Length: 439
Image 1 (cartoon, rainbow, N blue to C red):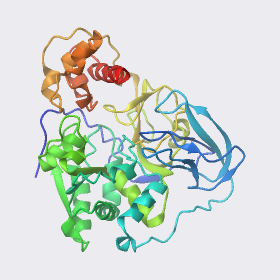
Image 2 (image 1 turned 135 degrees about the vertical axis):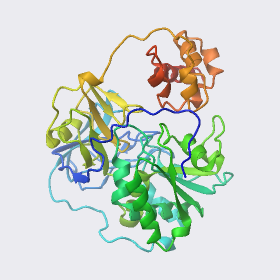
Image 3 (image 1 turned 60 degrees about the vertical axis):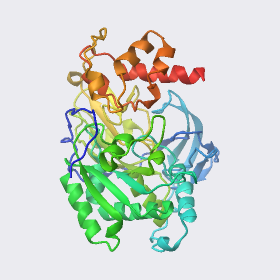
């Protein structure tokens, strides 16, 4: 069954560069630059000092408050220093710099704890908290918080996001194809924590191998009645939470609300995989799978990489680029963050790194709005992006506030279709920032 939502666009997928390529393990870097801010909320507090030896997976940053997350060492070695370094979130963020040294005596449990189904949900949630699991789809919201809805919020459905609608990226597709049984088990763990009986995994129809693998894994499981597979239309931004809920469950998340207001919890497939590893192996989130891609990349593919590995180290190992990049994006081209340095390290929320050549980047001056209405047609949130953009551009914040700017999901669909090349999403984001400062 193919379902969808109102609005959206169909940009070129460009997934052929890395699509279908099995995961490869990148080498352990000589040095890791591990940011203490890798999640929404307060940065972790460092609990190590320069000169201290650390093990792989050891706690180096402790969560600071409810909305925060632990940070762990990606490699064994010695803490060289704790200093500011370029990160994807800030020009200079506090990082723990570790140089590799010593044996890989990991504190990860080698034998899986298959008794998890007999444990209370609170203990499972505790393992997720201790291991520093956050959302791996890009938002990096602390998973422990997301799986702890208030008592007055009744959850009846767990929705697993396997759509991966962002162009170029293929890491989630390969996770579903490579580890379908693990994804199903991770889904069951979350069901146990939430006390929910129903889970739905939504996958776009352009990933038939992933759908097939999941169905086979469910058929081989004696818990098949708890997990459903829904095939979705291939459309951007199908993977946005509110749009996914509408497409699968035909429920509306209220303006200013969260998925829990529609009785739903949404988790990305990468997060589900990490949750399983935390619960079964007590493995902290010190490495993850990413896509490295682009027409100018010599060896595009899907790779396992240590958190804190710099982009320059990744490029060196995969053979570099065929030309100087015109733009480097952490994530995909629609929602990703443009980088100005190859020294930026991979973080927990890094789903991919995209390199674009000069013939793929068209830098032009934007023009006045011609009131064509295309942005209104494609907006998946039902907003008036053109009016929002114009109000912010003229600093008419009172008008902008009345146009529900915080319902914008920053998908970039409006900017993509604008014939005047107006940076509509950028202006809306600026408006959000200015309005927050006024509150």
